[in-house]
Image (cartoon, rainbow, N blue to C red; front, side, top):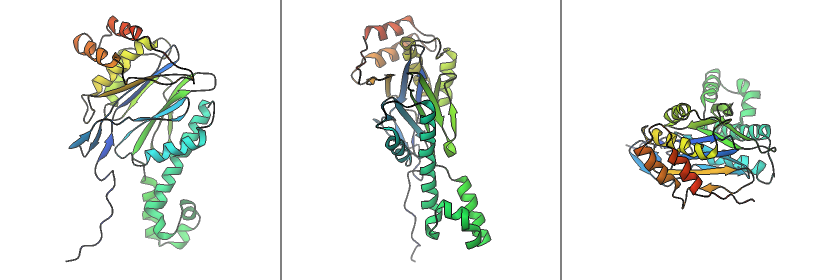
Length: 287
């Protein structure tokens, strides 16, 4: 018996996903980020060591999460091609550009998945699909186009041309929602727990300084580890306008904060947490 050819497997078929990413704005104009470093396959297999944040302009970066992140690199690449050489970027430019990058990639997926066999682009389908295709086929394709998603979400953050920090989320269809209020957000499997923790700790972009935000964001990451597939390893960094990233790599801050969290936190903020950040004598090198 000869079986019909099977379609090539996709990352979504394997349940490939990346999980929690968290970002928070501080009152002294920093952005603090933390995420796990795990990628999972169908909930049965996982691997550590994945950094889930990428820059697409000097002062702007993006976190990715979702059940299928196969299209995420292409969205980010499109945004990077638009903005990488720009010295500054306004909030509106960042929003429009990332939405454009998302929607261009979604159109390409629609064309490749549904329309290429009919030698049509999405624009062709809208103009002449009803005339050239059977009604039932046209309707089925219309439903398929309407339901098509990339399978990933983005949390975008950075600094505008007047050094003001911003945070927004990009979801299905390129829909953008501002997260400047409350000034923090999370995406991925552990997002609900992380957001709840930041709210409980009363994190505020207007009143919470960086030295306290480090603990808040890491505490949010630790509490999110109770969610499915969220890994225990933590990557975090602190971003300042016009500066290189201060990264957790080679730093003793994160393990010390975790120890405090386990011994004295859950969920109050130990005074020692801010002292740890002060003692680290963080230095930001201007580009």
